Structure formats: structure tokens, C-alpha cells
Amino acid sequence: MPGSQQYAEHQRRVAAGIRPLRPCTPSCPALLITGLPRSGKSLAEALLARNARVMAGGELALVRKFATTQDAAAGLRGLARKLSRQPRSPLAQWYAQRAAASGVKGISYVTDTSPANLTRLGYLALLHPEVPIVFCRRDPLDLGASLYFKNFRSGHHYSYSLATLGRAIAAAEKVMDHWLTVLPNPMLELRYDDVVLNPDRGRTALFHHLGLDQQPHPAPPPATATAARLFPSRTSTDFDVISADLIGFGRRFHRQLEPLLAAYAAEKRRPELVPAPD
Image (tube, rainbow, N blue to C red; front, side, top):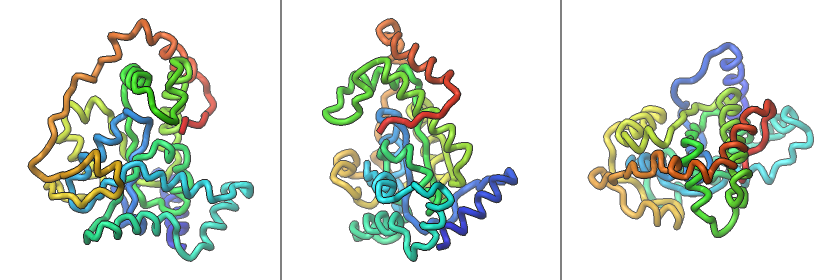
């Protein structure tokens, strides 16, 4: 299929040191915004949802869903051969269905902010090396404090222990560093502090990365109930005031968070790559 041919070409270009500056015209209308919770994913999605070509999908986790349907026992080459024989891409179909369900014409991207996609991005690259990816990062002390105090109702059990949380943050950073080295997809890193302090510049970087018109326009309706709750009505004139109060707030808990920092530092020193938590 075309995606596999593009992947081979991208791999050749990467091996030659040539990286794409902006995405190809996507055959799959997905836009992956990934990272741990509380790292700025929803903020990035909100900035992107100012554009009429971008639909806020929320945590769809469609890449994770796709990965669970694949048997990787034959290895990467075997999986790539299998995917190349598929007449249609399930991922392209799933994201296109989300866009079509809105009834809005001209949607180029449906965002997917699920943290569970982070460790499965290799599956995405095999089918769709043209799909853009945005990695969201945040100061580990602020991120750790925010995750620990969040007290998730379900999932994210790693956040209940400071030491486990420190290792999880370091592991997620290592996974992102790995993908930035090996994936052919157009990729962009966003740092929470930078976007909060200057959201206009963050939005400009995102729009440029996607080849979008820099002038915000009324956005299409969100694709999920969660996204609708987060982004009920987005227009070019209702730009939210983003508070900078949470930048550096983890420092006030520095002593209490010492187990997190110690575990984070120890994990960063480990040379092997470990999976990020779901």
C-alpha cells in the first residue's frame, strides 16, 4: 500500500540525514498529540482546535487500539510485509469516520491525545509516516507534583507512588527521545512552560508544523464527549487566558518530592529503553 512505500522512502531519507520539514498531504487525517497526562496535551489540542481544519478528538487511543489487533511475533519486517498487503488502512478509516461523523467539510486533522498511544507510535509509522506527531513535555518536578495530586479515578496507578512516578516520567522522556531519533513522521516538541508563557507563539509553531493558515477560524465540533466538555465553543475571539501559576509550583514541594526526583535521576541514568506507562 502507499503508506509502506512512503515509509521505505522516509527511511532512506532518514538514513541519508534528510528529514521532512513539514508533513506530506496526509492520507490518514490523524494528528497525534502525545505524552504523559498533565504535560500540556489538552492545551496543545485547544490551540489547534482554533483552526477550522482541525477537530478536537480527545483521548481516542486509536493507535493503541490498532496495535492490539496486530501480531508482532514475526518481527518488524514481517509485520511491515503484512501491513503492506492490506488494501486499506484501518487507522485511516477510523480517523476519517470521526471526521465524517461531524458533518463538517474540510477537516484535515482529528487530534488524538491518549497517553496510551506513546509506546505504539512505531505501528503508526509503519502505515502512515506522513501523520504528524506532537510530543508534550513538562518540567519533571511540576509534572510529578501535578500527577501525584491529581489522584486519578482509574488507571495511571504509577502516579500513586512517588518513586514509581519518577521512573515513569523518566521512561516517558526516554521513549519520546527514541521516537524522535527513529520515526520518519514529521515531529514537533512542545514544552509546557513555553506554551503557557506565550500561547500565541505555541499556536504559531503548531500551525506551521501542520501547514495550516495562521489565522484562526471557527473550529468544527469536537469528535468526542470528552473533547466537547473541554472545548465547547472555539472561535477566533475567545482565546483563553492561560494562567502561569502552575509553572514552578512543584518547587514548593521539593523536599516532599525527593523520592520522585531520586527515582527520576536513577531511571535517566539507565542506558536501556523501557516502556512508558499507559
